[in-house]
Length: 242
Image (cartoon, rainbow, N blue to C red; front, side, top):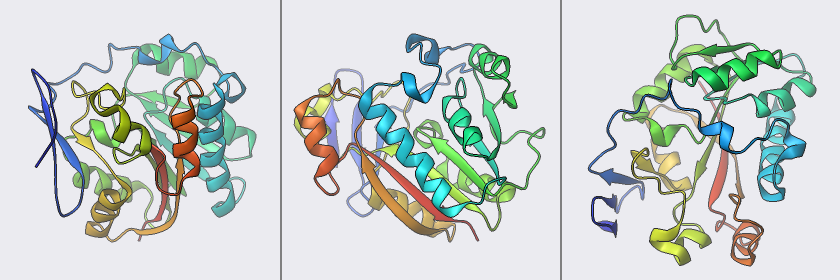
């Protein structure tokens, strides 16, 4: 069933699992040549806008609740390493992998252990206590295979995935104007129900689900979405990997 339709693309969704997908799918993007992160000019969690900062701290708190200091954490698609810095500050041993050559270099310049490349990568030395993927899975053509690759480096550990929620209040009201669709890059459009569907296929057990808002400049709609249960346009899901 179609969810949205534009001149050059459409988004359909599954009536069973509720996940959506982009038609036609994105063409291959040279993420190694891109530098999406430079547009923000944020270097630390403290620099982030209020809603973004709040969501980031929620994610860090979630990992802190389940992991001991000194645990090894891998972040896939870590950008310039803002989240890794916060985890390092909390006493975790952190590693990142980031396809953008310029973003990964800035992370290394900040003293972080970040590899330039795409996951999975042979230079990634597990096992890890947890793997983090923030706004990554929607860029992956075959998400179930990706989850199995995560499991290979963190068997018996945890996975924290952060995704946009197309059933949140903001996308319900803004429809095509919601900035998080990004059909030229995103193969998939998730909901908590849809992520749970994928996790069950690889036998991951969800431990915690939280909602937050993407950065919308402090708009009333996004603030309401963040406090009404299930209506945030972003969600954080922590799962136990068998």
